[in-house]
Amino acid sequence: MKGLILSGGAGTRLRPITHTSAKQLVPVANKPILFYGIEDMAAAGITEIGIIIGDTGDEIRAAVGDGSAFGVNVTYLPQEAPLGLAHCVLIAHDFLGDDDFVMYLGDNMLEQGLSDFVTSFESDRAAARIPADADGPAVPAAQILLAKVDDPSAFGVAELAPGGDSVVRLVEKPADPPSNLALVGVYLFDATIHEAVASIAPSDRGELEITDAIQWLIEHGHRVRHEVLEGWWIDTGKKDPLLECNRLVLDVLEARVDGSVDDESRLEGKVIIEAGAVIERSVIRGPAIVGVDAVVRDSYIGPFSSVAARCEVIDSELDHSVMLADSRIVGIPRIVDSLIGRSAEVQQSNARPRATRLMLGDHSRVEIS
Image (cartoon, rainbow, N blue to C red; front, side, top):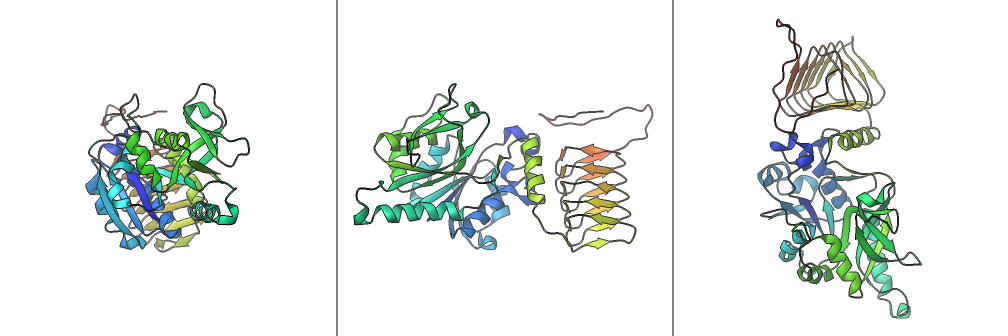
């Protein structure tokens, strides 16, 4: 089995962060989102992974390399324009061949891993091939992951067969949803999907939709199996969901101190201080993480905060926030629910006349108390 990770999107919902950075490399608990997906595939025994890349391809290549750091082999598959998830399968055909494969959206985060998802598909296919079970279910050509949601009209929704063992219809953002089961960005296919993606037409928005390709499988007599998600699932494409994902991941990490913490500082709860980090006269209340070579001095870091490598927090308070690498916060009494980009500076000014002075990129958002 192979893996296909989609990392070509522009990340418009996370601008201005993603004006200069791939959205899949924005960190959660100081680890790029993309890395979690690669690690999940490796844990499921998938070692041949294709990564779809777009305009941020060079940055993705630099971060992931050849995959050896994760115990996998990575092949990069450029997509000239974002023409849909099914188009990604279409251009990956030579890499995928006739192998089964998992397709994973590179900006999604799941609490559960991929191992059970893969095992159940393989087991079902093996059982359906046994001659004694010839009257049983057909061999599944695909498997989708579903999650129960409060507002299914905002998602692609699956309608199940009466017995609940297979999917009979997929509906994109229906006004009258047939169920509360929304499609999650993880799919498993056999080689039949290649005929499907080659047979469908672009949607009204000019893209080849994976929901249309799966619907093609259903209409041509192929069985589509499903699993219902256990635990949480978050699309990290916006600030607030990304902060929530950071909170959930930090909550399960184990405390450790590899950096320097002076006697006047206090660590409370699950706190990770990475190598080279310096904590002086500060309080850090976990779950929280302070990255490599970061400095926290005369400050308070509150729960569910991630301070990335080489950041500085001086005489300030930070709570439920994410700082990306090389950023600085100096003399700010309280920052909450915030995402601070790479090499950004937030500092107090004593210049007269007193005023708030801003230099903001396109699509920025600032809330001032």
